[in-house]
Image (cartoon, rainbow, N blue to C red; front, side, top):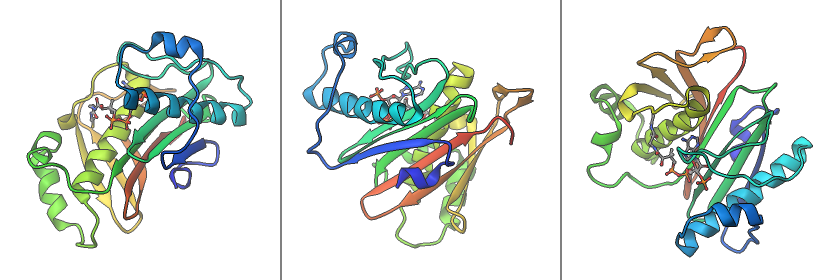
Amino acid sequence: MMGSLLPASVTVVHLKGDDHEAELLPAEADALPAVSPRRRREFALARTCARRALATLGVPAVPILTGPEREPLWPPGVVGSITHCSGYCAAALALKGEVASLGIDAELHDELPRGVLGMVTRGQEREWLLDLPDTGVCWDRLLFSAKESIYKAWFPLSRSWLGFADVLMSIDPRTASFRGRLLGPGPVVGNRSVTAMEGRYLVDEHWILTAVTVLHEP
Ligand SMILES: CC(C)(COP(=O)(O)OP(=O)(O)OC[C@H]1O[C@@H](n2cnc3c(N)ncnc32)[C@H](O)[C@@H]1OP(=O)(O)O)[C@@H](O)C(=O)NCCC(=O)NCCS
């Protein structure tokens, strides 16, 4: 699933369904504020996935705490991203030498609630959505998910906010890919300024999955 959207240098671990053991390390449990049991469980499931991915990368298991903007704090030399939604959770991790940044997102495959599309899109994007083929894909939700993946890949590089109107998305159904043009200054990776972020998507009857990879060299 998610793994097929990312390069081979990225390790993805996902859990489907609700009957998995979820493990929180003591430091993670201590750092988690008072939250609902559901939130505690998704937090723990994500960390269970992430630790399995770390093991595959040969990195020892460590607590994965959260930074001031809710970002996951990875061990030195590691980049990664987490997503969870009802019945699905995944972590995608890579060594920093291989990949500059990653963003993944999973959404239930359903239309966005009424009124949300206008808040997360630009007018031009709404026009383009109307041109996409009527194949049963909830393109509005897919576009939203793609923007969330872009934000998750953007944040570790720039450590700043990126609004939904700050990116102009285009979706290519022929290649199941998307591109988000950054309308403001982009982060610097190596000696280039990133002007767009690209990703791939996968849709089935239950979920929409999107993934963005920022490579060191385009
Ligand atoms: C942060 C955000 C993207 C999370 O997406 P979501 O669909 O609500 O939830 P998901 O389950 O897919 O992802 C949650 C995970 O995102 C990660 N995350 C949260 N903030 C993050 C940040 N600033 N940078 C990178 N990753 C972040 C966390 O790992 C979190 O899981 P955890 O709290 O268990 O560790 C979303 O809540 C948000 O704030 N969006 C507004 C910004 C945005 O998307 N802009 C669009 C730019 S085009």
